[in-house]
Image (cartoon, rainbow, N blue to C red; front, side, top):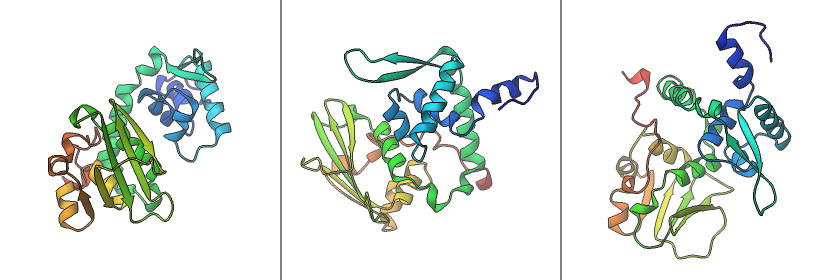
Length: 227
């Protein structure tokens, strides 16, 4: 897309204004490097379109495509110009939390994206021992209703199939409720009191989940409509 204007906003929009591009940059800046990692955070994007957008960003000097040593495949790394977009993305997220939150619809509550964000939000150092298994059962899902976060030696993996390990903490809720908690639309205590959430596990871990599970970095921002 070209606007035919010398305005720097127009020229920047020619690079990041295409559909999916800003979200691809978001995923790379949040640590996604392999094609599958980036695709996981984008949900419905087709592999063909993602490949096209990655090629475009590489040609624009936003990404470096690099062969993974000793493995098959490539990784995509942010260049300095890409990294400089981080504060802009954070500002855009701040604006979205204040002004666009009311635009959420039922189809926006994506369980795959939720679990990816919960995986990124977990703080392994705050959990005891070398391994902790957390199971989520989503009551509003007919498929992919059960998920596991497996924390082992400081690493966090997400499974939608039973990993065959003893579960330490069980959470039963809806995807919407868990998203609302993560974005600070409600709290764990309020969701439990409203019977929207059940938590089973050691009290030392379940009494204050926010000690080991961070909320969204935008969660402290109130909606502009609530002020």
